[in-house]
Amino acid sequence: MLSLAGAVLLARQSLDEQRALFETDARIVHRLLSQQVVQHDAILATLALLQPGAEGPTASPEQRLPALYPQILAVQRRDPGQRWPDPALADAEAASRQAKRAALASLDLRTGRYQLVLAAQPTSYALTIDLRAMVPWAEWPMQPQTSPVRVALEHAGQRYLVQPGSVALDTPRPGWRFEFHKLVAAESQPFDVVATHAVGWGQLPWGRMLAWGLGVAALLAALRHLQRQRTARRRAEELLRLGQVARLNTLGELAAGMAHELNQPLTAVLANTQAAQRLLDDDPPELATARGAMAQAAAQARRAAEVVGRLRRAIERPDRGDQQQAVDAVAAVRRALDLLEPECQRRGVAPQLAGAPALTVQADPVALDQIVHNLILNALQALEQVPAAQRRLTLTLGTVDGLGELAVADSGPGIPAEVLPRLFEPFFSTREGGLGLGLSLCETLAAGMGGSLTAANATQGSGAVFRLRLPLAGGPA
Ligand code: ADP
Image (cartoon, rainbow, N blue to C red; front, side, top):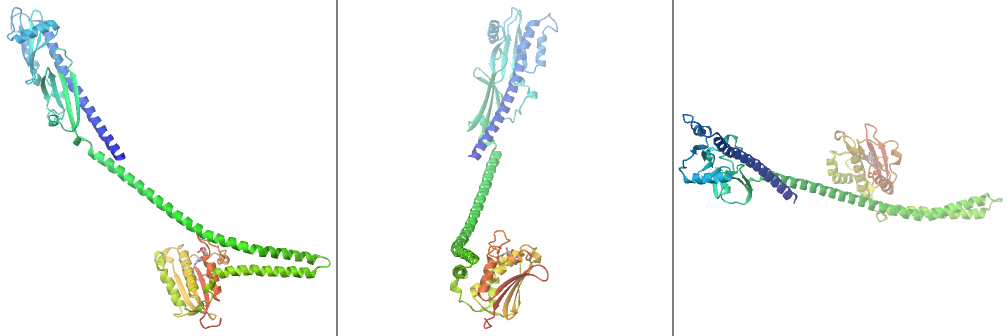
């Protein structure tokens, strides 16, 4: 609709411009023709005023007029006592005398000729005028041969074509037709100046209209695209937020449950120890009752420990608790690297595997996979903070102090001194959007398998080293 409205507006504007141009030209034409026609009245009036002089070579000065005015073909006069050679002139003279102004005679607009008679005393005059010579082409506002505008002089059902105009005027075609009608400014020669201009559909500014339509379409398409993009982004953000909320909800529930379960035994421990304190302060101290209160406190503390233990076992997946078995650590590392290959490639990191070609440890294979996966992913995230050319990731397998060891070393920024002691705390994270549960879980899992997980900064160059130690298969527990 916008395209259409704009196109219609452009077409209307163009038509208005063409109409304005046409009307200006038509007015100029009317003025020029009026000026010419008015001259005839003035000439006749002058002749009537001067009247013929004495006989002699200058007796008929009016005969010199055709030389001065090309449109005047002949000048005739009727002296007193004479008759006009043409009765039409006599009729015109009578009409002129009555109207007190010049009168038309033998009008033939097809040939463009007419006569103009002014009755005067004693001599009357008649001019024979040729319209073809009257048009002042030098001042004409249009190209008479090529202009599409038709100009004609009309009177009493006759028409003299001044300018032919385009053929479209003869064969009515769909489009617009501009017309201009005005009588020339001489009462004696009441010719109607009629200008006509036909504008067809083909003359509308199609190029501009099309450009406008395409422009609007392109703009709307761009806006729509932008809106779609915005909607997609909003949806993605919403999904992410929902995911985070869901995760946090679970964690929140866990924390609330834990607080609820721990609150009761801890309150009891507090009450019992305070009571025992008071009993011991008594003089003499009531030792037996105090001992009872302390025993109660100890029992409640054990209950609290049980709650924590239960929770820990739940996190460690009690169903996998006895899944310890001999596991090929090299294969576990290769598996993790394989899984994370796209991540490595995306960051331009080529991981190096070094150390012992074979290492078998006593471990829960799923837990081991999880730890290795986590350590590599953390290293990759740390490597993002240094330029691509400096990114190194080395995984070294070996045996240290009778334990199997996997060292994951990266060339990232390393671990700041203030972060190092808190690294394995649950919910400790320096990453935006990080949950801070990865390392704490890994440490718990490693400890669950009788091993350990430690972190340090590289001794040479920058970066961090995480060491996972696990009992060797078949070795001492
Ligand atoms: P998260 O990855 O969600 O932050 P983690 O427990 O995996 O949780 O990591 C805790 C924090 O330990 C990280 O936010 C980061 O500051 C630090 N960290 C872990 N691995 C590395 C490493 N390879 N280099 C430097 N800092 C690390």
